[in-house]
Image 1 (cartoon, rainbow, N blue to C red):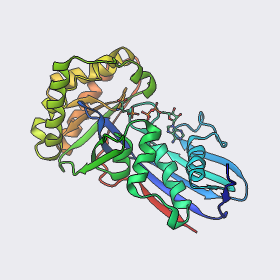
Image 2 (cartoon, rainbow, N blue to C red):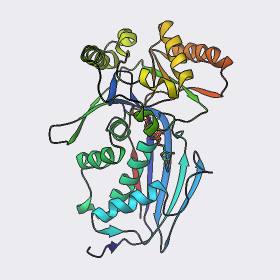
Image 3 (cartoon, rainbow, N blue to C red):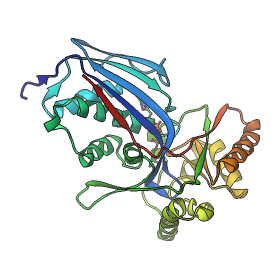
Image 4 (cartoon, rainbow, N blue to C red):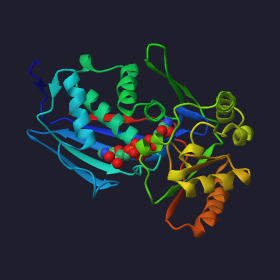
Length: 314
Ligand SMILES: Nc1ncnc2c1ncn2[C@@H]1O[C@H](COP(=O)(O)OP(=O)(O)O)[C@@H](O)[C@H]1O
Ligand SMILES: N[C@@H](CCOP(=O)(O)O)C(=O)O
């Protein structure tokens, strides 16, 4: 393997990346919405040593040396282009909760790839399309990384050559997400392990109809959000791993609220259609979870219209 070139110390890259809620009901592995909850990470190239200082989520659990996911992925991405950092100091302010279905791992991959890309010489930097390929391949599905990169609502797919594609759709301005985040985590890997290899054809057809309706509901006509958010591909299969989340989602839906499992769960997200309705949904959720055995955080998280932001200081 050819020797890696070493970057100069003294460059700082700051990345701000939004949380994302994938699936949105029937858009399994395809649709995702960026939410106004952000991780802020600053990376500085230094003479030597790989170290992370973490506040917030993961401060007590994540590795603080070169094994930190963002540090290791920055180095992997640099190596792809024949570079390494002499050393790296990472300062991470993590606000996106981990393993709750709000896209924390996607945010970490996007952060790492954007940091590495900004550290590369300008002529070697990746295009927006390449950034999508790298981040979606790391995550294994594009539905979180795409809206984390673009902001707003993203509909993504892999084409016949397995090349990831995405289109950004401006969400209707009235849409106001409310999230109920339970205390107990559920890893995406575990939740994916509950999915069947095959699904019934008529259920797949019904799901396709709802997903098609969902793009219309989210962009043009939120009045059809309740039928448009009905999923037949993943939520029920995952119930054994998060029964309280499914119970909350079903109770909200029975009351006419467009509630879904956020990502692979266990967070539940309801899509209100005004800030006032969002407050009422928040109160309704709080009433439902009063008898729960675990603590929940209930928050209104407006749509983030901008995707990840990168600043470079030399
Ligand atoms: N900011 C971060 N820095 C380092 N590792 C992270 C970060 N965010 C997430 N991770 C890793 O990803 C895991 C969560 O990924 P996952 O189970 O896919 O859940 P999520 O739904 O939050 O993406 C965490 O346990 C941690 O190992
Ligand atoms: N489509 C994926 C989405 C996972 O999102 P996350 O936020 O839970 O990582 C799935 O449903 O598995």
